[in-house]
Amino acid sequence: MILSFSWIRDTTELTLLTEPEQQLYRDLKRLRWGQNIRLEQARINWATAWSVLQRTLA
Image 1 (cartoon, rainbow, N blue to C red):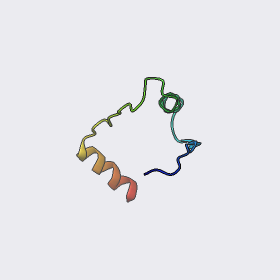
Image 2 (image 1 turned 90 degrees about the vertical axis):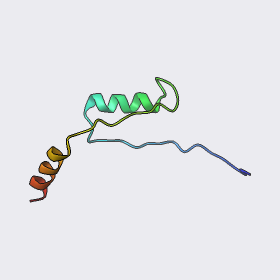
Image 3 (image 1 turned 135 degrees about the vertical axis):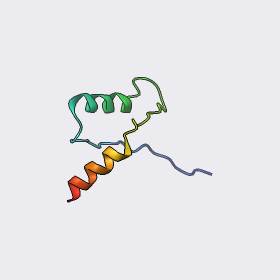
Image 4 (image 1 turned 180 degrees about the vertical axis):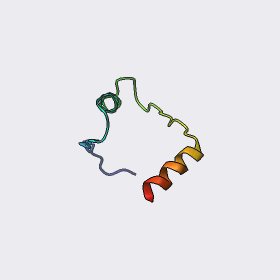
C-alpha cells in the first residue's frame, strides 16, 4: 500500500551535451513524443572502442 507519493522535479543539467543533444533531452523530459519513449544506443565496434580506451588511459 502506498501511503504518500510526490513528484520530484528533475533539475539535472547535462552540460557536456551538444546543443542538439540538450534539445533532445529537454524534449524527452517534456514528453514531446509521449510517455515511456525507448531510446537505443548505437553500437560501436569493440576493437575501435578498445583502441581508444587504451590510448586514452596510456
